Length: 223
Image (cartoon, rainbow, N blue to C red; front, top):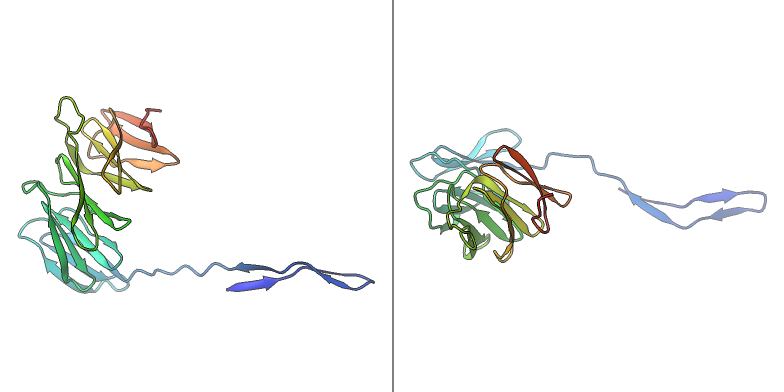
């Protein structure tokens, strides 16, 4: 609710008002969740967030789905092996995208930001970005680029985003990648998987070989 106020002073001469000010009170917090989407066993499930009642389920494959779903702008995304699925909120398939890693599973849920959806298959060299509306490929980043010897692979559950930068901790290296273009910002010899990087106040925190590394988020320098 918006309120308008003016201070005033009164004395023997008369009444004088100050400038008009306004403020808005904070709304009472409410749980606005409508649905809960979960990847489990062989299907994706949608539950009523208030009652827990099953709204729908969609069969994916006769296998265990080990990542969960992500929601953004009326679309639900789920990764399974070398497939990325997009559904509407009624369970209808909007599109399906394919990656190069048919024999590896995906443990991390998709990340959706600024109209793109990002995935990284388990023990894969690649990070993939797809257009969230159409499923068309936006870019692919290869972990072996600029690595000597070229043996680096990404792990699982280790991709994070902050602002317009993706951070990923691989087997030995931590990467910062332009989230819009897939261009490498920096790479530092520090990190491990499957630990998720944490980004806070201009710093990136990663684990590796029994050490906690603190990196400068802009340059990758070890602090």
